[in-house]
Length: 295
Length: 295
Image (tube, helix red, strand yellow):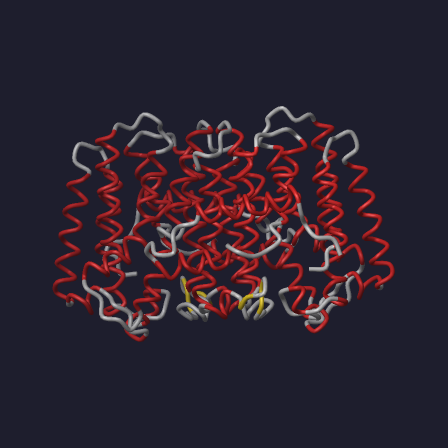
């Protein structure tokens, strides 16, 4: 097992502070909603997407202050999707990040509203947070990237494909389509959001970062599927074996555990290759963490 | 009863065509989700918010083509909020716009995702639809207006206040706070979105439009509460008496039916007064329709 340390841990703390500061205080009306929004977002999670924003920004020499808002915004979208995915009508999960899920700790109606409000807030931050010192056209590009990654042809679309696929036998290609939408789109947007902070990134660099992000997103999901089989609930912070219990298609179930592990190695290699020519040590660390992580 | 005719009916058709054209086709993957998004948005509803966008634009001499995207975007936010509000964990409604609600016609998980995807789409359109011919800074201002009106200090916050108030005795002030968030914020944003299409609206005009929108939003809610008591399910297109059955505080229940009708007249008068000096015939028509409508 590899643990996150050094710059990555520092960036985890950094985005935590940004989120803490930017979210409405828990005593601001409507207090229960704001408290629940903070419960769903703060003090938990690997912050994988914000880390990708910061690590990409480091590779492109972008001032770190300029990355805070995109990093926090993409995490809000991710956090809202977890709250909604955990609902009884969706995955019906009781545990998330080692705590009761939002609808268990509060109630279902509050959890629906928390997700809705977090999504709106992500776009509000990108549109007008003064900390984000980029040109209006760059802000708009960020909102375009994030809204497309979050919507029906990105994350939400992937969740719909996932629900439709429950109990179905999927091919590896169908599984990949599902994941490239469900988790891949937002991971890709994290890298592209950072690149959008600099309006002079050349096309070849952008293409390399994009390929890196696509490989990483898929690797993340393959490892997630493997962990659902081999890890335990305490380490994961969520119910182990939940995918298998729900009859979900996973890489181990579709192509077998050995092939899944092999795929993970190939994706790792391809991800690193895509970074060639860039000084992107932190992105390499994230790729390594992704395939070696135990939670 | 007054019926919508003339320009208002033409604008209703106009926004319908914009929505029809802009929403993803029902056969585009994921097909069930896209079909359900179209089901939830198209072919129904008074389109009160888009009408406000067009009518405000007319008062300010803004080219109508420039109003299409803000009109459609605010309707997407409204439509998503209806889908989520109708869910079993929220108001648990079976009928909406004379059709089965989205979660009844499809399923709960799909309805949750439909709402999520519609919200993302609204911001995507404002960020990058080429039909919207305004400067980047104006687009950003529109995204700010709409995200704040939609979020935890606007519409979603109002829904949270509403849920917390169920079965409680509210004062008239508390009722007004709830509605200024729940429906008022989005109605206000409709007027302000249109004004944002022109970067040269003077402060006095903007203040008048804003006051008009606040009065209208509240009038709309007072009439909604009255109709819940005196109308019937077929005319309303949703369950009559639902508010009373849910123990919700309404204007008739809090201040009495006679006072509610009086309040409606006062709000109407104040709304018209706020338009003085503007050539705003259509906004006047909307105000009249709002207080005289039967559905």
